[in-house]
Image 1 (cartoon, one colour):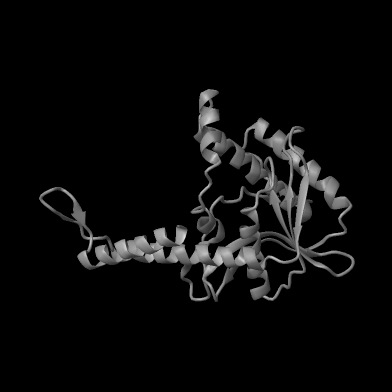
Image 2 (cartoon, rainbow, N blue to C red):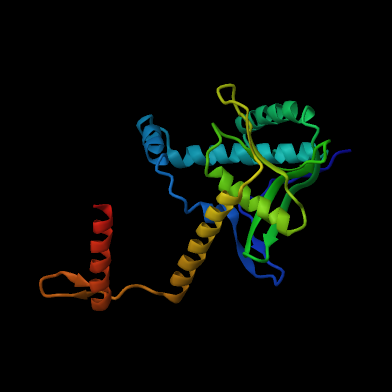
Length: 254
């Protein structure tokens, strides 16, 4: 008899070995600018579609599809009671697409939906699937349900690969599976054997996140002094150096 698994929480809280909360990978990457979303959201608005509801609907389908895939791999039954019939049907489409790929993949899962933390860098993440294929290659697999695989997704993948490596699970190959929900979407796979540059970018973003959080915690904000002519000075000494720096930048561009 299969077990029934409850709906997975969309946002996971990660804690280090001392029980202190650490930031999640997706929270760090949410700070990444995505200018392409602006015309996309505008297009939805012109079509009379509420962007917020649309995004929530797609996210719910993606969450359920992930849950169904994990449950299938663990021989468990997913709890769909919190979802609409349309969401269930679309998630089932994703499950069927994944199952077709999985049967020919020779992948043997070792970790599924595993929450890991980097004690060195103090961040966490949830691994969709880590396993081994017949030739001994150790594989990280991340599931996506959408219309494509985008470059910034590799930053997330690199962060997950580091979490695995740091916790004793070597990664020879990392891949993203884009699993369609409808016929108009394509099943796609992208593979990486080296994510060093992507991880360097992630570490920079993590550093920015932590510094911004510290500034907010410390309540640091520039002092603004207003002149009688209503121009402002943030810091007189800094004001001069900034102008010199700006001249240098202009000179370099010339």
